[in-house]
Image (cartoon, rainbow, N blue to C red; front, side, top):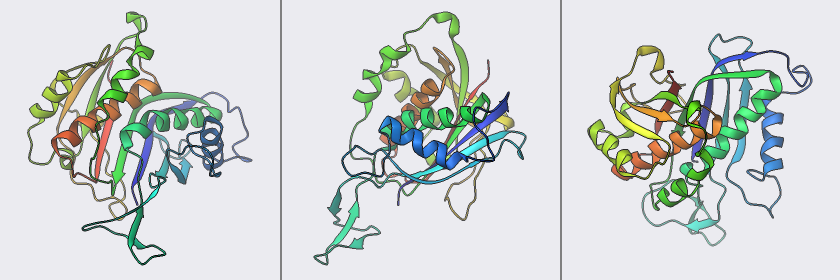
Amino acid sequence: MSTLFLEAFGQLAGRAVIDPQEEDLYSVFRTRAELMGWATTSNDCPLLWAMEEAELTAYNDPSCIGWVQVGLGVGPVEIIRGPSKPILGWLGLPMRQKSTDPVIALPALVQCFTDALSRFGVVELSSLQITASDLDARTGDCLGYLVSVLNWFNVNSEGRADGIVAFEQGLIGEHEISELVASLKWRNTGPFEFDRAVSVPEQHMIKLVDKRRFSVTQPSDQGVSVTMPEWTPSAAGWILASVIDAARLIKPNVSDFAVRVTRVR
């Protein structure tokens, strides 16, 4: 089952809007997703993901605010041909439920996550990390979607911020990071500027999550510098989605990886 595990790093300050003793992050995130039509328990609305787990960690972790895990296998059931991990359908044929492309899901997922976190205090976000597991091979191009939404980010240039995108070595495998940078620079990224490969400080490298659940490799010490029109959940989600889309163009069959975006100025 295709899975996304999203973590928020930084601090949770101020007073909670709701009583954390009465509500948990799981329920708040789930209802926010249902309200916006990003995920729902009904069968007549579009789905981007299925709720799995969530936990608020700000009260016992000095750097991680919380995390959420969702499943992407929410599309129509299809017959499988070739190697896979199928279930048998009612006709005895190998079947599976088609997964949402992570590039399409990520901007909404990041926004939903930070909206839910904000119910528990003021979110001072320093970075976001997405860890993906068992993704379907890339079959389509999401560049058109990523470009079509850029007008949202045509904001005052005084709000610009600098960041570093880090990842683990399995994202592009044996390919050079220069290929990823070139792919990002070739695209129309509007007010986002992917600049060059840079050394990633240790504190900005990806953090490996439970290896029993996710098959990720080692953090890369090389990342990509980016200038953003704003430091917001929407911008962070767009950056993560764009880097993943460009990387999967280079390595279409990558199914397990982690990517992190951190604001540095």
